[in-house]
Amino acid sequence: MSVTAMAERWVDEVARLTRPAEVIWADGTRQEYDGLVADMLRDGTLIEMNQLSYPGCYLHRSHPQDVARTEQLTFICTRSKDDAGPTNNWMAPAEAKERVGGLFRGSMRGRRMFVIPYLMGPRGSPMSRVGIMVTDSPYVVASMHIMTRVGRVALEQMRSPDDFVAGLHSLGDLSPERRFILHFPEEKLIWSVGSGYGGNALLGKKCHALRIASWQAREEGWMAEHMLILGLEDPEGRVTYLAAAMPSASGKTNLSMLVSALPGWRAWTVGDDIAWISVDGQGQLRAINPERGFFGVAPSTSGRTNPNATAMVRSNTIFTNVALTPGGEPWWEDMGTDPPPGLVDWQGQPWRPGGAPAAHPNSRFTAPVSQCPSVSPAWEDPQGVPISGFIFGSRRSRVIPLVFEAFDWQHGVFLGSAMSTETTAAITGQVGVVRRDPMAMIPFCGYNMADYFSHWLSIGPRLAKPPKIFRVNWFRRDDGGRFLWPGYGENVRVLRWIVERIRGTGTAVETPLGFLPTPEALDLSGLDLPRERLAQALAWDRGEWIAALGDLGAFYEPFGERLPASIREELHRMIRRLGG
Ligand code: SAT
Ligand code: MN
Image (cartoon, rainbow, N blue to C red; front, side, top):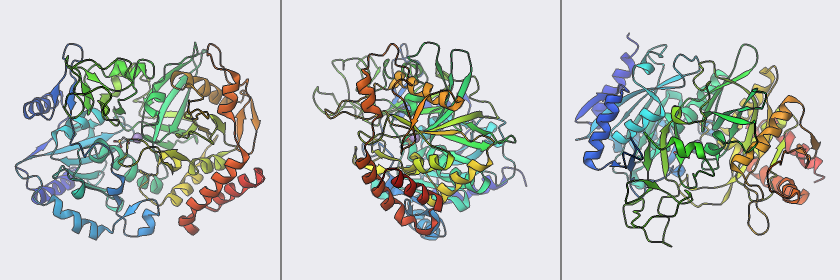
């Protein structure tokens, strides 16, 4: 059997179901991309931006009810409900196919069906994986060109005829009533209908590289994580690689391409959203970025918060749901410039000052990694980069100190499992509500999270020197609601301490939470921040923590016997240390 025979058979089957006017295999070439863009400019799917100041940039306006991931419509379809676990929506595979199959029947009539072979990860990497996705959306094809490696490069990497994740996507009628994002990890299959939005429709991203890959990673002994990867270079030129998990729209992209406020220190970007990590022959964790593009949040991206992204999106970028200036340039809130007269909002209407935001709060840019000024020379290394530290970060205005370090691997896994965060516009629903989000994976773990914690625990003992694990929170506020820590480029001061701790030099005090930096341990040179504010950012309160750990116990409850005993043990130890 040829290596693509199974893929071809599946594509035929899909075409019989969806009835497209034409089937086109994407080849990933520039010519193909340009052709798609030309078609979309013609039918209004894309709007040309100012080609002098923003060459190769286009604006897409999505359906106003299709602007973010829809977690309530996202399902894990395993044979056993327990395998999906209490934090995932579940549907039995047969029922899912019955219910949702009808929405695909004839859904591509009169449309072109594109077949996209894509590679997640660098060419030639043993850690890279192939997907084959079918879609009726040219916007999705063009976005996949930017976000993944499309075409022969993918087919060449298939090790056997069934060595691919299959993804079926159709826009359907874009109605949230008829929208479903279904994952069948046992069949390496994804079905997505009714949405053209990134995380719902670019199936290589969350659906494949996290939900399906996390399942495969557990079976095969590696890790698929919602993490950025960066290399921090010190003044002597030594680079330490860190991976950091943070919920959507909580500063991962900014941190991954941070411009250091400390002279001599420099960050190199490997990835901003997803890390695939495996244990090499020496017991060292090595990480690749499976993607080749960034799908970043536009609002608040500015020369102050993220100068690298600002430079990166000046060409070859697809903007989605940003506002448009009369000069054909993108505009969004907190971009660093005033809204110009004649601004058109994300829905194409004249914008009025004082009204609703001009750009949608979850408006995005899609840009190639290679355009990032801080891109790491190692970003496509087939062996991946060696990871020396993990960071778990979330958005909490209270309780969680700026930074602290876990006592050891097991304690660090516990801290990851205990993460909670305030929700953002990246998901449909209320913004700013605190919810549990272990390892920032709550929307992305393709199996029972209790088993996911066990999997994390099983990795540590396989490592020669397990990475140190840190908890960070850039989002703490004072009683007046003002942020205690300046964030962005200043975060390098925290990263520096982290690297020093990894090397065994940084100073810390032992507390019931873990190791906290002493007030002098963070380099504040050149920063106008009173030590008192830093002390507040680093403070922790016994009572608040005991209450928070009570909530955590309630969160663990539905996992029952499946929750690893050592996680429960860490919880009890922490309560004891706090004197609770
Ligand atoms: O889910 S997306 O990939 O569209 C963005 C995010 O929420 O991280
Ligand atoms: Mn993400």
